[in-house]
Image (tube, rainbow, N blue to C red):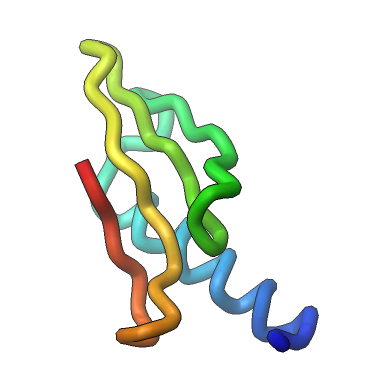
Length: 64
């Protein structure tokens, strides 16, 4: 089981990744609870992707 501190770190890493790859005021970000620290990122055209923390590889990952 993950500690609260670990969960905060993974949440921060997911948000940092999103911040590094998108202009934040041009996308909508919603919680996506089906993945660990998952975020649904949607652009102005309605296209979306899921960004999350992958426990298998120990990194941020995404799916279209």
